[in-house]
Amino acid sequence: MTQAPPPSPSPRPAPGAVSVPRRRASTCEDCTVRERSACACLSHAEIGQLQGLSHPLSFAVRESLFVEGQRADAIYSLTSGMARLYKLLRDGRRQIVGFALPGEVLGFASTETFAFSADAVTPVVACAFPRSTYLAFVDTRPHLLRRLHEDTARELALAQEQMLLLGRRTAEERLVCFLLGMRERWARVGRDSPTVALPMGRQDIADFLGLTIETVSRGLNRLAREGAILLVPDGVRLLDGERMARLAAA
Image 1: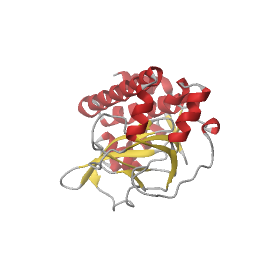
Image 2 (image 1 turned 45 degrees about the horizontal axis):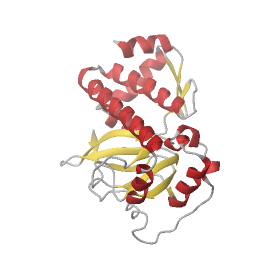
Image 3 (image 1 turned 90 degrees about the vertical axis):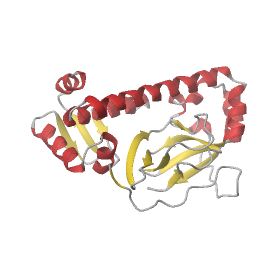
Image 4 (image 1 turned 120 degrees about the vertical axis):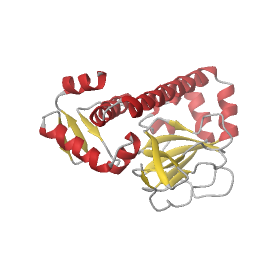
């Protein structure tokens, strides 16, 4: 963990709370992640109805989507970019608890306030829905509710894996598991490639893995020297998948 960065710009008000500039540059039919998001289970007519409820919003790098403790009046479905999810400790340190990718939904948990903060790692576009309206829409569509519950169960499994990662793994094993996990998550949203995109900085990776940035840098450089990965400008290319799989399974 590290000291928290300077505050991000203030989060946008929840949709419907006040008037905010909104941009509808594309429709749900044009969405590049629709087939891999919860919306994939909806019919053409239902997609049209859902689009009528949404407010497409754009967030600049480091701009807040929402802040921990803020009333959870909105639900966000990411359509592009990556968001960083984190909690601030009382001493000002930051613990990153996850990274949200396109097609994933934030704010669906049944709590009155957000349990963590989210800001944009890269420019983010998201469909924002007034929470009460979205939940009413879901309540009448069991197939959508089932899909959202499946996504929630997968997120819970990731959280459990993260607890094991932090508690029982060496620094190298944490790093390898992180890289393999990111490859699997990118593949799930249609970006299956030997190159694992890492738009977040090394400090973010360190805060997520409970390591120092120096340890992360040394670990990546060591894996590169040993031929397991190749460091590239936008991430890492996995070269020795068998070795990395053995480390992850240890």
